[in-house]
Amino acid sequence: MNYLPILKIEDLCTYFYSRSKQAFIRSVDHVGLQIAKGQTLGLVGESGSGKSVTALSIMGLVRGEPGVISGSIELNTPEGGINLLQGLGLHVRIHRDNGRIMQVAKDADAWEKTADRNLRGIRGKQIAMIFQDPKNAMNPFVAVGRQIAEAVRLNTAVAGHREARARALHWLAQVRIDSPQLRYHNNPHGLSGGMCQRAMIAMALAAEPVVLIADEPTTGLDATIQSHIVDLMGDLKDELALTTLLISHDIDVIRSLADTVAVMYGGTIMQQGPVQAVLGDTGTQHPYTAALLDSIPDQRLIRSKGYLQAIRGDVLDTMNIPAGCRFYPRCNKVDDTIRAQCRDQEPALINIAGGHRVRCWRFAQARPYSGRAAVHAMQRN
Image 1 (cartoon, rainbow, N blue to C red):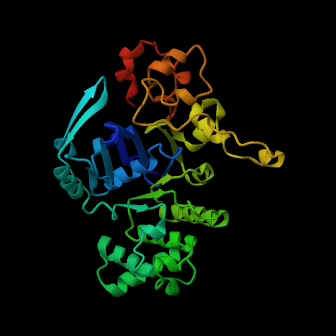
Image 2 (cartoon, one colour):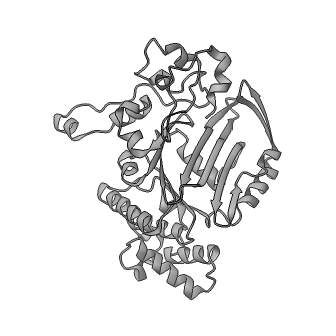
Image 3 (tube, helix red, strand yellow):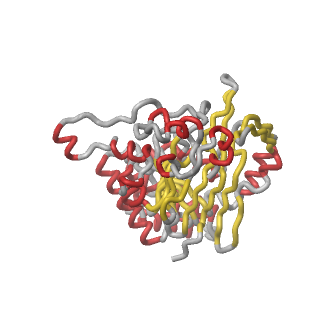
């Protein structure tokens, strides 16, 4: 199998400006990710950690001030590579203080024109997305079959209506939807949640994309339907060799479908690597990853009617990111040997074993502590 990255993200920053508080919301902050051909990368973390904004940044669906302001998103296809953020830096002036972005001046109109030009022929064709709420993502007044057929005509060499309809029926059958001929004529609100999600998956796959982004594909579905959707995506991954970025709160879904996983908190990556190393080996887990896993109820807890373990404190406000570790105020693994580092200096994302990286001072105690003067050198991936 070819393990060269199909999608490679480096130093991605997506900030938004709060006029009321006159501060930047650092939704995605120096994030780096990569996905190899045929692999699934799972992205997990609490709400507000930056997962969906990362996906929207890849798709070029972030607008507003300032939006995506730095980094690169490289897509490699058989036709060659392209940086989806190519040229955007020409329209942004960034003032940094000690490595942190403090002020941004952006020509929004020129930036959006360049972004749209970069993504022409990419968005929806080379990179497709399954959204959280398919009934709201699809046109409520147009039959789902016609919407899939339109995606075929827009993003493939198929131009005729008859052939596009045949391809739409093919994809409806591929996603195991019952009675494709009948469902072709149903509007989204005439379908159940599970069938609508299957139709959304069919529409995303109809363009035969290089990369598929699935943002919470099982959200809002009951447990049985969730299981069916997970089984479907697993089958499609095997049959079509899909390269997928899978975003989910459900760690069991990530375990079932992902080859590698990245754990996000406070807009940045806290841990990433092979799924078994990140979610299975308790000896090498970031304290945040361990806390997420501990908050999942198991059979023993249910039988004993015990209390769920919650992560203490509140999710980080990314307008007020501390100088030290972002998880430090909520961490229960801090001891006196690393307390000063955790409080004052953000750890680097260091490699601890073949492709397994962790951003935590517990795994970097051998590094010399030099206080705030080393923040800029250490905070970058």
